[in-house]
Amino acid sequence: MSADDFDDVETVLAPRVEKPAADGAAFALVVVEGPDAGRHVTIAQDSPSRVLAGQSPACDLRLSDRTASRRHAAFELVGQRLRLTDMCSTNGTFVHGLAVLDAYLAGGELVRLGATGIRVDRVAQAGRVELPTATRFGKIVGASPEMRRLYPLCERLAASSVPVIIEGETGTGKEVLAESLHDMGPRANGPFVVFDCTAVAPNLVESALFGHERGSFTGATESRRGVFEEAHGGTLLLDEIGDLELPLQAKLLRALERSEVRRVGSSKWTRVDVRVLAATRRDLDREIQLGRFRDDLFFRLAVARIELPPLRRRAGDVLVLAQHFWKRLADRAMPFPPDFGSRLTAYDWPGNVRELYNAVARRVALGELAPIETARPSMPSAADPSAGPGVPPLPGSLPPPSARGDAIEAVLALDLPLVRAREKVVEEFERRYVQRILAQHGGNVTSAAAASGIARRYFQLLEARHQA
Image 1 (cartoon, helix red, strand yellow):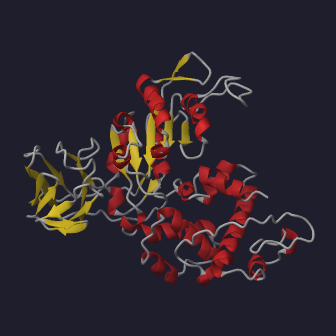
Image 2: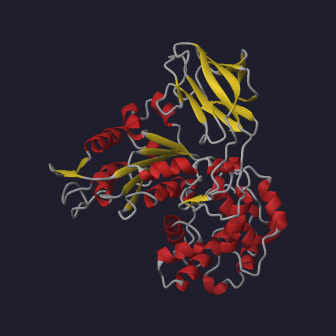
Image 3: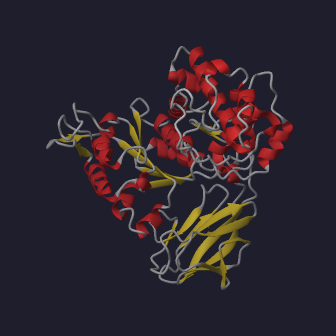
């Protein structure tokens, strides 16, 4: 299972949060040199996510300077300071003539992006700025300031029908946010369809998107609708849009512009009413520069944009999320270990919510021996464990269920390296958990997923992975 499979792990918490208020501090970015002199933008406590500067239409401070990169630098308010991050720009980012990759600004600095000079002014806002007190938006929940700043923007996007690009690292909850935008908007009664651009063979992507007629290619034994037709009247999420091949990007652009699709093997165009959301872990501006993504498709999709912060920037959410997962996975008699919580908050979670979920699952299964970080999977053996009698089992293969007894003892008896032994125990735990929760809900996947506290898509992936 790839890391992307955890993008739809439901981010759930419901703590009681006091109404936060900022001290009114803010920063103004004023272009003082270059072709865009006079342009400015203000970054305040209620500004959503990061403010990007560069040539891309997706940037908040858009520059026409040809020496600036499409997405050159990011500015983000952190406490009382302004954080400046170079976004792997071509010509670099400089503060008072010194090249920087990541720096904190206090106001009064001159930042240079290509031929553009930007003065950073510290300004005071009128009155105190209060962040929203809401701790959730649909299925996305978080009490950190980083998440609460996003909720007003999410509400506005949900009420509209414009295309949205959702950006963020793997595991940050992009699919869950897309589903929440659908559920909280006027199309909530329509279908919500997800198309993963990485999950379909390249030669079948066009058929999956637009459908096909019977006999249009080898194996097309019947006519089938594509995801655009399936999503008619609702929302279509194009997951990992940055991985779609260029020839299909052109056909997708035509479908978006005309709101019409044509099945493979057909000459008839079908009208569709679909709101399109796109999610990506990639930097699409960089993909455009490298010639791997069409700029016209980007412009068509980037009517609105939202960036989900990584878990390491969501102050306070790690512990609450961990406690939520613990309640879902552990026996009710097992209290959440305080020492475990302190270890979790000391880690920066490069795998985001996906990795946090894994860490909690390992702790439930293995106790104090469980590591915090996610272990890399070992390379599979080329041997065949089912070769027949007389062939010794593969190192790391579990005995048949009837011979297992205690799962941990069975793994220990295999004399595996520690990392592989941990993986085997977690696999067995997941298998038993899925079987148990499905039995409790009469085989109903939707109910079982809801009771498990995870998205249905991820639950289905777990079920498929552990089928005997």
